[in-house]
Length: 260
Figure 1 (cartoon, rainbow, N blue to C red):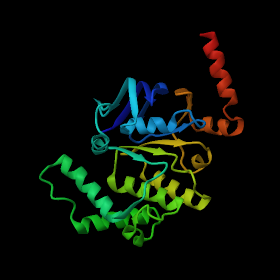
Figure 2: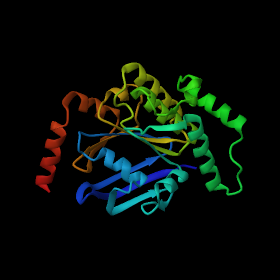
Figure 3: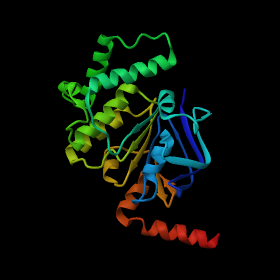
């Protein structure tokens, strides 16, 4: 069954300041969407609002996931439904190993679906974790390290993708997963995302740069300016943006507003 995330006329603010000013977007499983825009456009705000960050207030619009309005749901409820957010700045949790974190998260999701569930058997979990770590070219010893504690930028981002791989969401929002990565780490992370994408996983990839799209081919590219998606297209739109920047797009948007 296809899972669809539908965003309609979404407005949101933080500390009384309007950030999102009417976002419309639809992402379905088996699709990869890239969302691009300059600093301050509202990209990360959109990611946080979709996952229910309490600092952001939705003032208008709808967020429909799998046919249900989720605006009033807590982040953990959205996660259990099949939404996932990979953070731009993952938080370190000293004392909690990667493996224990992942097993606890998997068991919480299973128990939400079936209160009688006893949790994933250890042997099954170890096999799953090994499979996903091999996919991401990660040393198995990584599972015993404390979550993001002392991790390099590349290790943090790979840990986020490992979470996505093991939790198996239906729609994943990746907030600048490519930021801070050297070319080798970028290739590994991008190959992992590509391997996991579709047919049961839809991806909303938020990025500043076209370079990650050299490794992850999006079905759709969207440009976010001043809290609104102002242009959508295929992968060629990202290439145009890389060559010309946002100046021409800003000019087109300004001309359209004047004509209106």
